[in-house]
Image 1: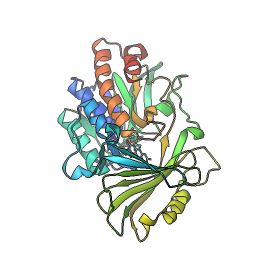
Image 2: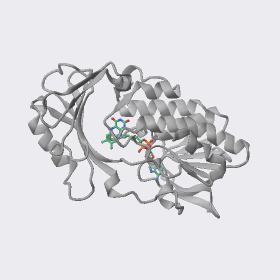
Image 3: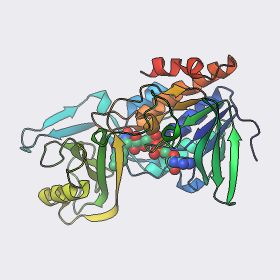
Length: 339
Ligand SMILES: Cc1cc2nc3c(=O)[nH]c(=O)nc-3n(C[C@H](O)[C@H](O)[C@H](O)COP(=O)(O)OP(=O)(O)OC[C@H]3O[C@@H](n4cnc5c(N)ncnc54)[C@H](O)[C@@H]3O)c2cc1C
């Protein structure tokens, strides 16, 4: 069924988009969410898969449960370049959480959004915002399944399309940075590895610092079960640093845990590591998640930040629309409440 005259269009059904759309629908807004992926692919994402419990407590979203959980995480060992005298972090609640099956987690967030009343159109590739003067009033998209060009209008458009920011990159506004400096991006590579032997502490994440291992970033080993891990490297600093894959390959060779491990999955990705956008809103549009550059620049985690921001944004969108003022001014409290 099609939704006529949505109040809000959310572009992208990643964790930030699903939570924003759900909150909008819970606030009584007619909400349409578009994603270029097929429905059963929503949630699939190259990631470290780790998320802290604190984000669920802050947003009221149910904790991961059942087979969504790969492992419960209850601490971390942080290794300096010497690989000796590691810092053992235990009992600090910001480190308590889970590694999750990213696809199952994403599918759950999608189902919760739909259950709250969100209309979801999969396989819709958004191309650009529709503008009336400076006000964003909708989006132009291609319905990939039917090979049709479409347009949809709404009072507020939310760009939750991830780092590439399909709407952000097409807005001409001094506060909305469309191009991101290469120095402000961490390039990552990660593998899901099946280990030859069980982990001695399957609830402890490991983080490795040092310019040789990961210049400007870190390497990680997040357990995903007693004998499976998500391990990777993120490096910063722009061009001339080499590839994260080659750093990971050196790291893997040096680390005895990975001897005889087999690769179940391998891929790379990019994470913004800087402050969020100068403004998270302008006329008729708001940005959330990686599209808003909301990842934590210290560790690159962004699932929780997008969930927290989306929860606020749903409430602010409701207020702005109720006051018939979905302009930058009407949406401004999203900036002040998030930042
Ligand atoms: C290697 C790596 C490891 C990471 N590890 C962690 C970690 O352990 N913990 C953590 O918290 N964070 C981690 N992050 C960061 C985290 O994955 C992101 O911050 C988070 O997933 C961003 O969510 P999002 O919803 O903003 O964007 P995304 O998850 O990127 O979702 C964007 C959605 O928009 C859709 N889309 C994009 N363009 C269009 C378009 N034109 N039309 C329609 N749909 C579109 C996409 O299909 C996608 O579904 C990691 C990132 C990387 C790359």
